[in-house]
Structures are given as structure tokens and as C-alpha cells.
Image (tube, rainbow, N blue to C red; front, side, top):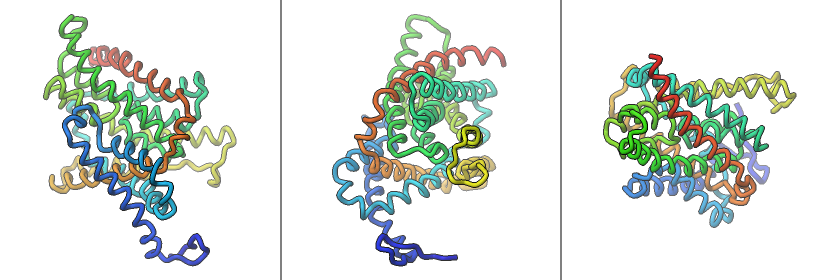
Length: 362
């Protein structure tokens, strides 16, 4: 196998030279990721549901639109590696957060609620985004994935399948940050108002399932749950983890759907025979969750894997921010925010209705 490539000057480049060329970009993304992780530990930030992932892309955006263009040529190789390979590795390790036993804690009703919220929100995103607003397909896929599953992590995982651009991902993540943060404050307020005025009979546990099945980011779910109490927070996190577990089958179905759609429309991406693209990292995600379910790894190893996963995803978000130009995001206009607002209202209203109705069937 040939282990050399051509450099920009046309000279053969060994794997050591390629690795060395990645160092500046990896270091830059690493510094941003470390800063975001450090900032995310402050109570004022943590309690508002802002995770290291969202902070990493925000810091990356600032640097990417100020300092980075002057050093982009030195860093591009490492940044590209981070956005591709390290991102996929991070999605695989994300499975260490889950066990199949989590499903038992929310019961069949919780699983059905999560599945209905996910599918209805994603399909609604495609209809509103593409049919009513005339938006780009890639953006609607990413906004829909972020709103319906697990926020920024779902956007990042969907990007390779949807073939999204950096600006598409940035727009989708921005909507997650905006409306997920609104939900972090609004949901506890609604719970307290409901308790005061007695509109609906909703327990802390029911509230937890509602939060876990409808709020975007895991960090935002934790913040909204803890605002009510430990029982609500624990239930919310479990419901959210079951929803996160649906990421892998979602990606597989999406990949098959896009492949079929491309064949029908005659669109080709250069792959012979219009073959279905199977996202291997989605399979790795399920495999990792299954491996974790068998309790074969020491708790220390699992915790270390989760910490590594946090770092990899933060690196990917930093790289994304660095390569996103504000002018491209501005070019997307207000339509992504209108779409995200419509999905947020759907999650709030239809999600509440499902949370009240589905348990009566079991």
C-alpha cells in the first residue's frame, strides 16, 4: 500500500510529514476545547445548560472570524482531521454513556414517547423547512436532527450522512443553543406555574420524562431537571439517554432514505450503483452501548472513556467553529431560526400532549 501523498508543492509526503502537518491545527483546537471545558465548570454557565460543546463552537467562531484566517494554511490539515476522524471517534465513544438497561427505568411508555417525539419533530422539520420555508435540504436535516434527538452531538453525527457544510452545522448548532437555553428556563417556570394554579396533574417524575423527551442538549436537560429536584433530574436524564440511544438507528434509516431519494432524483455523489452509505460510527455507537450494558469494563475505564469522548467532541466543535464564516451563517437568514422556533413550540405543546396521553395506554 502506498504510504505517501503529494504535498502542496507536488513533492511526496510521508505519513510522518502528514502527522507533523496536523500538529498546529490539533493544538489550536485543543486549546479552544480546553478553555471551553474549563469555562463550562463555572456554576453561572453550567446552571444555564451551556455545555463545553456549545462553548467550544462559540470560541471557535470568534477566533475563526478574527485570527484564524491568517494561520489557516498552517492549521488546515489538523483541523480537517479533527472534524472528520476525531468527530466519528467521539460519536462511537458516546455510547459509553448508555446501557440498554436504561430503557427499563422509563418503561415502554417512555420509549414510545421518545420515539414519537423524535420521528414527528424530524419529519415536521423537513416539511416546514423545505416545503413552507424553501430552505436547503442539508440545513433542515441538521436542524431537525439537533431538535429531535440530542442537540449538538446529533448535528455533528448527522453531518457526514447529510453531507452538510460547516456553515450548515453552525446554523443548526446555533438553533440548539438558542432554543435549548430558552427551554432550560421556561420548563421549570411552567412546572411551578402549573403547581401554583393547578392546570394539570403533573408529578416530578412525569415532568422529568417530559424534559428528557423534548429538550435539546443533555446539559440543558440536567439543568431543567435539577431546577425541580433530584427525582425529576434523574428521570429526565434517563429519558434523555434513551432518546440519545435512538441516534444510531436514526442515522441508519436516514442514510437509506437519502440514498433512495438520490436514486429517484437521479442525483449521484460519484459512488457506483447508488449504494447505501452505512455510517460505521453509528454501528460503533450501538456496539459501545451494548458492550457497556454487559458491564464488562471497570467503572474507572468507562469514566475515562466518557472524559475522552467529551474531549474529542469539544475538539470537533472547536474545529467547526474555526472553519465557519459568519458571512456564510448570515447568508442563511432568519429561516433556520423560524424553523427552530416552530420545532420548539411543537416539542413543548405536542411533547406535553404525548407525555400525558401515552402513559394512559400502558
